[in-house]
Length: 181
Image 1 (tube, rainbow, N blue to C red):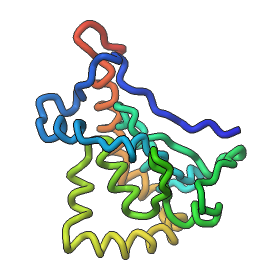
Image 2 (cartoon, rainbow, N blue to C red):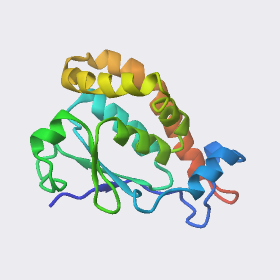
Image 3 (cartoon, helix red, strand yellow):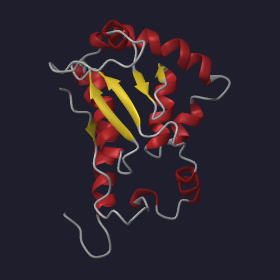
């Protein structure tokens, strides 16, 4: 049986603030509008793909509020396909299942995932009139060629983002009385 990876919420269950966004009223208002029909959102990804794994690691570290769940479709025991999707579909483009059971794929999955971890500015950029069609056209091309991207380039692209995400995650686990650092 596959266990969906549900990244930990901040260490203090009563603490709903996000340390990396303390005092950020835009982030606070965003959190208040998290749609319960969408979140938690389950992302289906391929950890055997270096690019996919790097991006999901980044999202896992930033998922301090627990709005995302992760299902590795390349895990030997993966067997829970979302309704209407085949393994070939899951390996071709990123897919997600919303809390109410809808299955989404492609750029919309990234938009919702980035919003869930407080990167609404990335999501907002992908909705701009000029960038939206470019993202919708470019993502399938990138997805088809993702295994051709050298690991060194993937590390270069994500090393800083993953480091910042780890720092943010560690800060979110700290509260006024304790910090595991």
